[in-house]
Image (cartoon, rainbow, N blue to C red; front, side, top):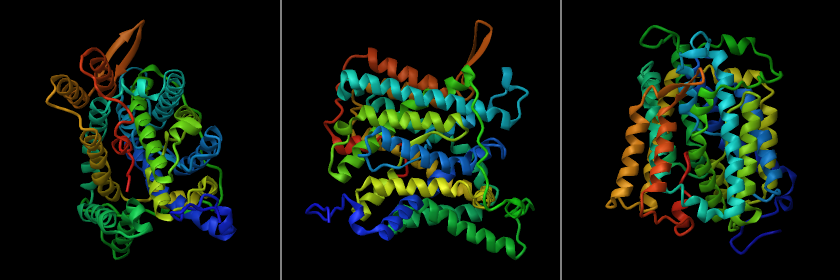
Length: 456
């Protein structure tokens, strides 16, 4: 058996095919709750015409396999849906000027996906720069004093959505929230890795029981509607759709790539620390960024969400001590197969808004808290005026420009969102103000916690 002294298994083939299949299923379930939550949430923004759960699962599986090809089959990482782009989807859904004025929500979605395609391609730019200059020189321009406040803004800008959904039935929302907290804090083994999934399952069971005895939401509406489930087939093609491009939607989504790329770098650091191999050097951060970026662009091109390496699956690596990337690729295949089962997608799609609100209460708050953690663990010195100025400008801009900044160039209406403005100003101020002393790699443990995943 291929093991180290710590008991880690690096070649799962020694365990036999049945155990490898079970380990693959475990990884699929670890990513499942968070991955499907992204299309569920975007459907609330786009009034039921958002991202498809089937397409999301297929793109997550294929994106993972593509990432493994780009990273020379060495990195045991799964690519699931990125939460970083949720604020961008919500912003595009709310756009009602220029060409978006007369569009239905379903017509706006492809433009949001087009923005994600461009955001994914920005990974390739960073990958090339890192390949040429080295990661330490590049990360000097993206220190935690910039990335931390941007991540804080992503979470806080979504807070009203969480309250709105939870208010449809506070009882169910509180159950979803409480279950996530209980499993995240006191859960054991695999259950600690999947608190979001458990929160959804338990609160859905409560909602099902309440609906069965004739209870309704406070406004009189039914708690669960299974009409779509009954009509759905067991096997069917996912509803892929080709993205569209518009400069305003691109400017909404593209700056979010900054936070998503920091998430990727943090996850690569975390996986390297967990497995005991330096994946930032071999196969190289430029290769993993390229794989993540291309997977994101390909997913969005066909109507899927942005992809990102998943902290949930890093937790499974730590739990199981099985570090073989082959197991992750099995999980990816399972995800693709599940994406061709419409009835499962409809069951998930029937989830009450109150459950989404309860989960979002935790999720959006944790996104912001991870931004704070990024600042704290990297020991950003706020006794320095430059750091205070950068953080203050990012926070006020990111939260204050609720409608963004709209201007016209050559007859084309362009909107820069609050997050885009915040990212631009933060990077520029960090570049021109003296005293930047951040060096990537000096504090590896802090560098692991730079992203917006639900890390155990």
